[in-house]
Amino acid sequence: MTNLLEIKVPDIGDYKDIPVIEIHVKVGDTVKAEQSIVTLESDKATMDVPSSGAGVVKELRVKLGDNVSEGTVVLVLEELVSSSTIEATPKATNSVAPTPSIAVSPQATVVSVPDIGDYKEIPVIEIHVKVGDVVKAEQSLITLESDKATMDVPSSASGVVKEVKVKLGDLVSEGSVVVLLEASGSLIPAVTQAITTAQSAVSSPAPTVAPTPVPQVPVSSVAQQSATSVTSMPDVRATISHASPTVRKYARELGADISQIKGTGPKGRITQEDVRIFIKQILSAPKTAAAAPVSGGSGLNLLPWPKVDFKKFGEIETKPLSRIQKISAANLSRNWAMIPAVTYHEDADITLLESFRVETNKLNEKSGLKVTLLAFLMKACVQALKKYPEFNSSLDGDELILKKYFHLGFAADTPNGLVVPVIKDVDKKGVMQIAQETSELAKLARDGKLKPDQMQGACFTISSVGGIGGTYFAPIINAPEVAILGVSKAAMKPIWDGKQFNPKLICPLSLTADHRVIDGALATRFNAYIAELLSDFRRVTL
Image (cartoon, rainbow, N blue to C red):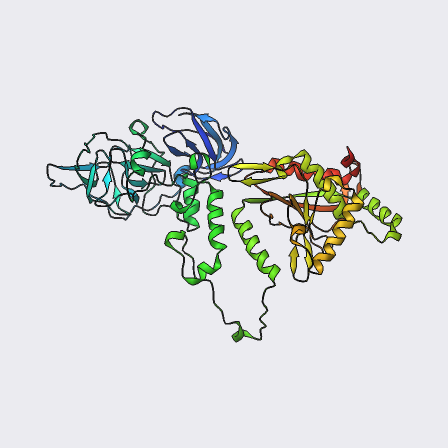
């Protein structure tokens, strides 16, 4: 028999009404005791709320943006196993930084780890100062990270660093000596013991630390770090990387240095998408990787690009890339690496449209002009771009450029690779004129005679592989556009109308959108609207 267990926000000190910035689980997920379920963020701290039990998520009681306090129910678990069965991580084996009796001169100040609640033997993951640095009171000296929380240890006084008493990986507790300071000039020691809980718990495996109970972050002792005092110091990092525990774990698993990643979330917070983009940027530069193992500044520890003598395995032929392939490779690599793209699929019933297309071509047989599905797709896309103007835009820094014109590109297959001719002012042209222009531009593309201005200015691109085959695919966005529509081969399928199955000609649509501009709901509506227009093309005239 299963039991229902309410998982609540634990004691988080004096913090109240803290917004939920991340939710790491969904209904149906299986969670373990101490697994992070949501992340909270105040103006001074980011912290994870772990599960106090194990089981399957039955119900989520919070959503993004909700404000929660101690005792707020986060979710309801259906217990499957006792949380006591979850194995504990082996005891830490790192050397513990002792708290020795230190003889210092009257001018020296001992800076120790202040009260950090129930946390003990926490590893040092970052050291922000070195001997000779000038520090001010409340400036961050080191960063600690347990399996539940990431904390800054600030200086309790001002002065010059005479000696650093810890090293990376050391385990420290309350009272452990961090640095010795020597008074310097007008820098007056300020006795303000405080700790800046800069970030939340890292849910990474942290092999050197035994698991701790639900975090008791000593909020009453939190003091905000002075960014001004930090940035005025040479060789001192202004702030530590601002990321949730889940994101830190994700970066660690991929081998990414979190300090090298620029955050795009609220207050510069690093998101999982930022980590993915960072990894893509590194992996999209194989020449750099080939020179030597990538480490240090790049944030990744990659093996050199493989150099293989293929001739020893059999006969080979070396063929240089075409000019178009070289240009495309560079552009596509950049777009794939830098755009957080998501692809959405939709099926369009084009049974009536295809009948109309065939009939139209029969009526215009003598003219020699054949109307393809592409011309209808372009008209439908223009209608959708008008209804959803975010798709007819480009990102320019922190601004969105909304375009009032409708120029559509289409991918054309040529002997030397894909090119993208552009039909200008599609909104002002009829299907027959669009069909004629696409036919002419496609021929110029195959003959290698396209002019530069015939491949510029597109707002939106259609990539159709329907004439070749395929079902669904994920086209790469053609920057600086924010979306691209992929069209695959139409096929007859039995569609249930509530009473019986009817044969329908179904065309698969694959829309890739830039998630920075277009979220999933908007992308789905756009794709569904195009399918709706194609199913009854009379709607295009409305």
